[in-house]
Image 1 (cartoon, rainbow over the protein chains, first blue to last red):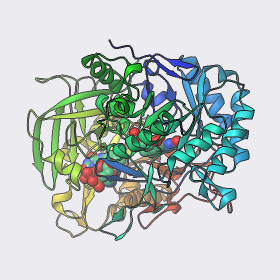
Image 2: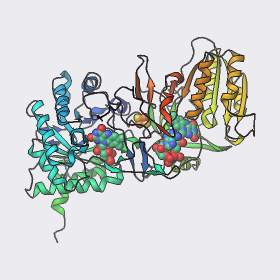
Image 3: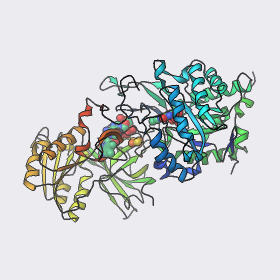
Image 4: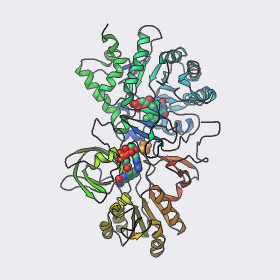
Length: 318
Length: 290
Ligand SMILES: Cc1cc2nc3c(=O)[nH]c(=O)nc-3n(C[C@H](O)[C@H](O)[C@H](O)COP(=O)(O)OP(=O)(O)OC[C@H]3O[C@@H](n4cnc5c(N)ncnc54)[C@H](O)[C@@H]3O)c2cc1C
Ligand SMILES: Cc1cc2nc3c(=O)[nH]c(=O)nc-3n(C[C@H](O)[C@H](O)[C@H](O)COP(=O)(O)O)c2cc1C
Ligand code: FES
């Protein structure tokens, strides 16, 4: 057994493997397949202030080694989430990362406030701020595409949470310079970063010759995007190593299906990883990835801490 | 207690039946848990497949023991990449299965008359349902419909499992030429059926519901919507359903379904290959909002 303990700022987790937001619902469904407390943490589906129906169907299209989704952040709203879902996660002893979002910066703050004042906040080990969603006040431009909006949201959320609560800003790779967005989020007080959210795509149904998703565009995820995730983590971790931005923990997500996939993101600079779309293929995937990562580290005589960012140290100097 | 299992199944038989393939897979633990109307989600293409999403199929029948240990049977129409892979499996090939999933057909508490309507491979779960209903003293009539004779599934089995069978085909190659909804009113009236069970294409389920309602019967229909996971974690399979409180919500058909009371589905939302979010749905987008 390799030492899988990971440190994310002040937060220590027994292992680095988590679910990815929106790919594990709020826990009950996967708990039928494995014990959620086996994971480093459980990440909840992004929750907003009010209930949301989400988008029309079809909401999905399968693509080569991946899929497109346009769920539209369907959810019960923060009040029902806290009383039903978070309370249940608390009761089973899970370590929980709650993913929050808003249509406006003020809504993010409202959701954070409700969360922090709930008794089950005790099981929350971190808050993931999903800034990869549209800002209604800014013509629907995604918060994480603009450094100013990103830092506003992170700053407002921080004011609502007890001091010291770890927060991770979740970034989209669909930007010109992800390092600039990472910098803005960290300057505004985020403990660390989660990278990456889905990439925007379109699939055309070749029988009907029209977009397959009712919502036209969707987010691309799965093994197909893993090299993009590795690249984004590499660039941001590289900027940290060079002192261009503050050093902070990175949670890697994008295309992880096996322990070796997880090791790639870790070697690029991630201190923890999330398993998303692979869970649809194999509901036991998050725990399997943990065990495979354990074996892969053992085979290389490394601890998890040794492996974080190791590829930067080992890259060939030309 | 566990109510679902994930197992590496082994194919023991793959037979061609008309336009379909009838697969028998060793899947220990499923039969003890499963009830008619539930489904199985199968991974396709093996452990390194580029097709990540699971394919869902109604459980045709299950058997708790036998020469091979517990087995499950499914009836598959080869369509796209995943179903082509599955229908190409041979004995001893492996397939990862997750089952049983979803809610089964609810059974009447009284020995009432029932009609079971299947469209195409939609008849697959109905023979097992018929057996369970007859054990409870219910009269069972079956109506099987399809585009053509080769797309009917289980006509011989229907004659064994039901007290009466009516066949329809669109092209008249077997039974009455026309749709199941053409013959259903007569069957309901003749038998005094209190419940109509349906499984098949969404358009057919809608007309079954309309006919049942018009004749004072309750429709229980097993729906089909694109599913990525089958286990309730992806939210792709939703449809608008009205709850006991009268409110419409976008609910997951893999968890709260696939069987719904027909009159609870918002058929008005389905059109031209999409399902819209009715404006009165809980959390529906508001003008100017999301
Ligand atoms: C509850 C349920 C029971 C079903 N029972 C049967 C059955 O007994 N026999 C049978 O032949 N088929 C059944 N289907 C339909 C079957 O799941 C699809 O035909 C199959 O998934 C298509 O896969 P593909 O690889 O051929 O197509 P592709 O188009 O390549 O599939 C791509 C993706 O879309 C999903 N998808 C595409 N069409 C459908 C569909 N109609 N329903 C659900 N998901 C779809 C697939 O799961 C996959 O994730 C059932 C569907 C559901 C939801
Ligand atoms: C169906 C689906 C729903 C998702 N919902 C959310 C969400 O609510 N919030 C979020 O931050 N990310 C969401 N994501 C993105 C994932 O958390 C993850 O960042 C992305 O899918 C890449 O990881 P993967 O390739 O392992 O899936 C969703 C992804 C999928 C496929
Ligand atoms: S198919 Fe994934 S939630 Fe229903």
